[in-house]
Each structure stands twice: as structure tokens, then as C-alpha cells.
Image (tube, rainbow, N blue to C red; front, side, top):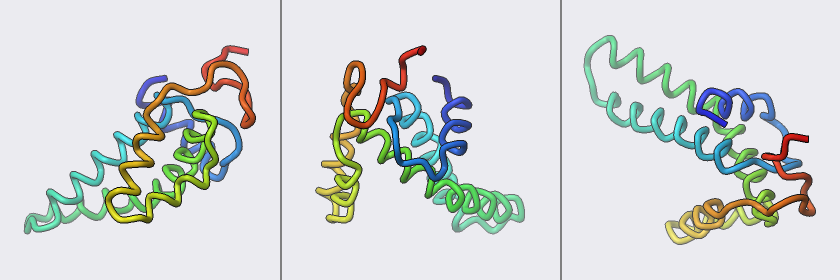
Length: 123
């Protein structure tokens, strides 16, 4: 899955927490979110009209992307055969987010698991 496919899939499955998300689906979408966040930080204190417009457009993208990022994270945990409830660990300052990130990194379960079929299978 490439960058644009990932964004399309995550927005298509905006309210879907059932099933699984492959590493490429999740991490490409997460990259888009991080890029937008960095742009937001870089344009926050700029005085130009272009920076002001870019700031608000990027803020809009981030707000619209919060729910798909949340649901993609749950589906990614499902791909690793873990409950989506582990995402609540990220509310523990600093260490909780690190734990969740390390849970999202490994390759997903081969074949079918309790959350559905492998998202990379062609059938």
C-alpha cells in the first residue's frame, strides 16, 4: 500500500474499528498526520498571510484526521492480535505512548486471527 492508498483507506474506514490494518496502511497515514503537525508547529508564529492560511488549513486537516487515526490505531493493534483497549495506555504521560508505539510496530499476525483475515491477503 502506498501513501495515497493509505489515506483513502483510512478515510473510507473512518468509523470502522473492526478488522485489521496493515503496517503500511497505518504508518503512511500516521506520516501524513505527523507532517501536518510539523507544518502546524512551523507556521504557528509566522506573520505572513500565506503562513496564516497554511496554519488553518493544516489545523483543519488534523482535526478531520483525528478519528481516522484513532480507528486505524485500533485496527493496527488488532492486526498484532491485541485488543484496541491497549490504546488507552497512551493516556499515561510519556511512557504510555512509548508502550503503544512499540505495540504498533511489529508485523501483524500471519493469516487469520480473532479480529479477522490478514489485511494483506489478496482473497
